[in-house]
Image 1 (cartoon, helix red, strand yellow):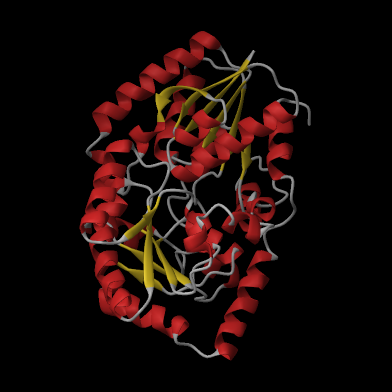
Image 2 (image 1 turned 30 degrees about the horizontal axis):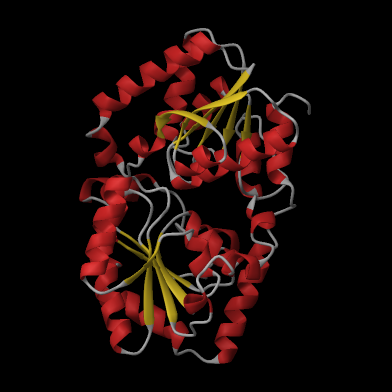
Length: 375
């Protein structure tokens, strides 16, 4: 008996690795195998396909990789059918993972399929709800509003809380991962340009300009190089930043968020991490012109960033596309860095309110129980 896991992005890798650990903790002794990156490997998942192959972003970028993705899909589907795992668990990467599950269902796979962090069908491309309902036995969304949307639209869904309620319960323990010099740096500003190659390409030059300006004004910018980034891109990013005399951190981005004065980051899971650690974040995002046009036509939400969606207000400034400029990012960062204590207290209270919306602890073990079929 085995359990197959498929993740291709940094956040999906983290969920897959944490589920693998929870399965072992609960006594599962079978093979845990599939596709993933560094974190699943370190958690003991037998990785047959490197998840770094799916570090893509945006419609235009994905379309350019279609031939290689289809080859990968076919190879993985054939292997799943040969090994007949007890359960298939997919995490994030909907454009790939939904196709993978559709393919194995068409080939006759009868086992249970679970979807960790299903796509944001509540925000755009809601037609995917029917696809998910047809091939996935149970979704594990991260937020209550996602859970309610899935149930309302015919998807089986299970939710008790967000994994971060447990993982971020001890801010001091997270900060302890940093070297002493960074842990007590009162001028540290964290820069997190993303975990996908295209994100970094679009945002890193802009963030370097912002960081240079902050450096001139006495702040200490430190850039996070995402651990899940493939080795070639990691080395290119490291070389570029070091050549431009910027300090880097290669551990988890959350470590920097735990101690920094504020942060500048790509939109995504990192914004929720910042909220959990009471770290004020300026969110920036740039897509290719075609991807941006499609997103503008299809996305139905007022806000892009989860903390803002939870509160239905702009807790963290969102600077998208043409608004993501050096001047705008600096303006929003200085609103916090040079802001009065009463304003900071008000924003911190709103972050606390949003954190209270994330439910209970023990999420990974509850997922693992259901994956093993003991619920």
